[in-house]
Image (cartoon, rainbow, N blue to C red; front, side, top):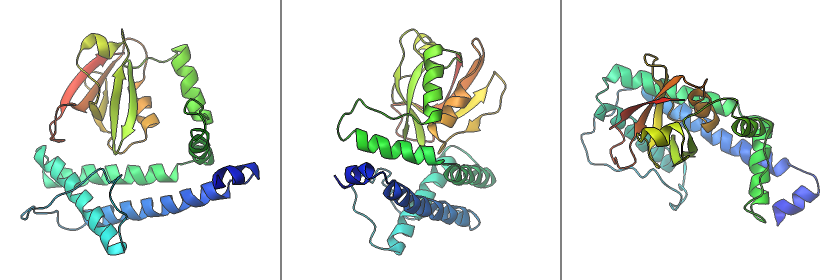
Length: 242
């Protein structure tokens, strides 16, 4: 009700204040991770655990508790790459690129992105079928409707740091190939049969989609974590024709 009242008074100040605080914490988080990369990598000599989904977990009590959670996240990232057979130097380089990209993404958020999130939060309070499209989202919608670019025939959504396949479009490349299924997570994208795999963990969904799209008949290769795979270091390479 407060958000509605503020909106009716034609003020968007709360939306930008909320996002500003979130962005501040987001940057602190990745600055912390990048600093840890300059130190010795974890040894994994003691038993520990990490819960990725904290949607039902209590808020951290203080900065020390926050940094403890960040450190566990860092150790989980290192462990996943270590279990995938990556040497320490490659682990550092991969995570450095991943964290720097995520920081860059934070700096690339535009006012219309914040406005879209705010408007959608407001409209879904009243009608789950009403959405506001930012200019970029609107353009993507037009591309999808006109089929001016081809994809893999799958609906995607972000899930934590991954891009997850929600469902396959009947008759599309992915459904025909039979090599992908819902809940598979995309961690890398490569162009053509010889292109270098680009690590897309932590990327914005629309940036991942931009990599997957391309001219009809061209090839895209996806590195995925299969839906039935609990170990995130166990990946598989899938080749599809757009």
